[in-house]
Amino acid sequence: MASDRHTRLVALLKVAFPLMALGLLSTLFLLSRQNDPDAAIPFADKEIQDRLRDQQVTGPFFSGTTADGDQISFSANRLTSPSGQDGANRAETVNARLRPTKGAEITINAEQADFDISEDRADLTGDVVITTADGYRLTSDLLTSELSTLRIVSPGPVEGTAPGGTLTAGAMTLEKDGATDSAQMNFTRGVKLVYTPRQQVE
Image (cartoon, rainbow, N blue to C red):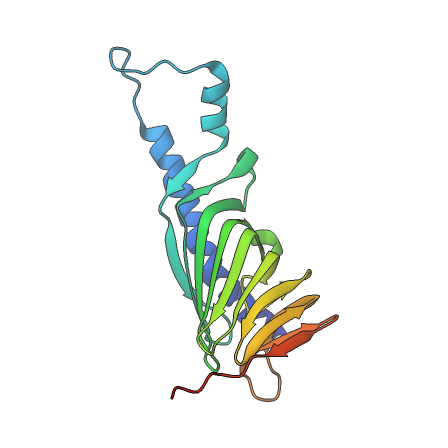
């Protein structure tokens, strides 16, 4: 048990450290700027408060591995720390790429992602699109992902295309199969797959 906790902690830190580094860099950048009275641009008090509260990094990128060796890379247009919360980060225009040790590569795009390092959790919202190398392209309003292991959940409906047709379901979970150690999608709650035969080329 102690070994499992140590392995999970190491995997979480591999993902957490890049995020914390980005936050530290943004803080150092803001604090190191010197005020030049002759060149300073006047800001309203509210705008100054917003800038101090929402420290941000433009174009962040990081990559890491889970406890099982799955590779994860992440990029966004902007990363902020809303309300100055320690360990909490918000990313905008997000692209995440997952390369499991076994199974198809997965790409996730979303308008926004909220990371909570202390909770080992990320919530992706806003036109979330999941694409896999083996032929799935699904949309969801919300995806919840663990940071230290490969487990992604859509607690609400997903819909889109699957190999051979169209697919709708009330929920979805993407995680490692215990028997094969391969990344698999599991659909639940009113699953509907409509088969679309391929047209033969004459």
